[in-house]
Image (cartoon, rainbow, N blue to C red; front, top):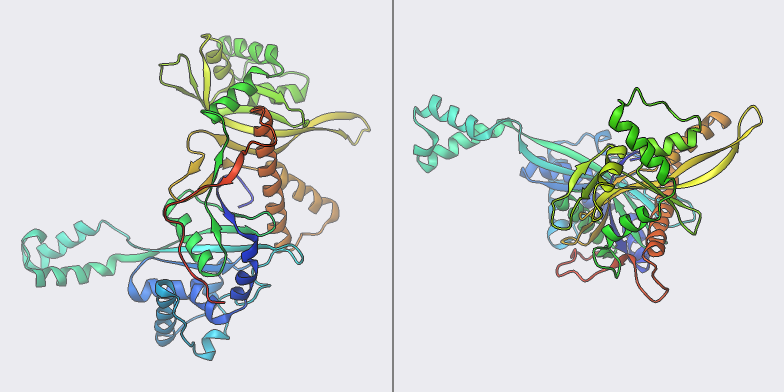
Length: 439
C-alpha cells in the first residue's frame, strides 16, 4: 500500500455497519476470523485458509506462541465458523489473550468516520519443491520401482514422506472499508483471494454488493481515450517531440526550458483539460490500432505513440494509462511563482477494468504519487511523523476522492446527463458471497 498497485473495488451496504461493529467487538467471533486461528488451521489440517489481522499489526498473530492443544482448539474454531458459522466456546486464555484484534478500535482507522482497515492473510499449503520428483525419488530408493507402479498402500507411504517437503506460503493484502461511501478496497488482482476476502467480511456482517465500471456507451473505455486525444492540448509540442525522437536518441534530445511542458511531452502523448479544471493525460503502456481490422500495437514510449496515431486516419487508442492532474501555482523560496502539476490519480484503462465473475471493479496500475510527497513534506515541515491510523485514513480519503474524480471525469467526456447512470455501479451476480454473521 501507499504506492503503485492494483485495487479491487466492491460495494458495501452502509446499513450493515451495525452488525459489522458488533462482530468486531466479539472476541469469539474475531478469534475464528483471525490469522492466529487461520494459521493454526493451515498447519493442523494442511489446508488453505484466510485470516485477518488489524491494520496496525500486519503480523500480530506472531506475537502469540500457541501450544499444540491451543492450536487444535483454534483450528477447529476457525473451520467450524467457516463451514456453518457454528459458535464454540473458547477457553478464556485464548479469547482474552493477545495475537488477534477483538475490539472495534483495533480496526477503525478514524475516530468519527466509519472507516476500517485490516490485513487479509492467505495461507496456502504448497510444495516447496517439485513434489512429483520427490515422490519418484522416494519410490526408487524405498521400493525400487517407479511411483506409477506402486500399490496404493506403498503410495501412501511415499506420499507421507513427501509431506516433509511442503510448507505454508503466506500472502497478505491490505483491505479498506468505507461505510460512508459504501465501498471496499482490496489490493489484489487474484480472483480467488479477492473472493475469499469478500466472504470473510460477509461472515463479519459486512454486506458486500457486486459492482462494475459501466457507462451507457459502446466500447466506452476506447471512447474515453480517443475523445480525450481528439481534444488534446499541446498537439504541436507532442508532434515536435515525436519528430525529434525519429532522428535523435533520448539523451540527444534537448530538454525544454519550460519544465512543466518538458514533463508533459516526455511522459504523455495526450493532455486534455476538462471543464472541472482537471487535466487528463494519456501515457504508456498503451495499445494503438492502426486500422479497424488490424490487431493493436503495444507501445510504451510517448513519442512513438504519437507517431503511430499520425500514421493513418483510422488510428485509434485501444488502451492506455490515464493520469488525472491539477495545475497549481506555487511560490518558490526565491519568491517567484511557477506552475506545477500535481497527480490526483493514475490507473490503466483497458478491457480488464472489471472482474465481473466476482463482482468487482478494478484500479490496475493505480497510484497517487503526490499523496506520498505531501506526507513527506508535512513530516519535514512539522518534524513529526503521523500515527499509523492517520497514514491509513489519509490514503483511504485520497483513494475515495480519486475514484470520484475518475467517475465524474468519465461522465463529462462521454457527455452523460443526470439521468444516465455511469461509474462504479451495482450489478446482478449469480452467486454473491454467501455468509451469515451472528452478532
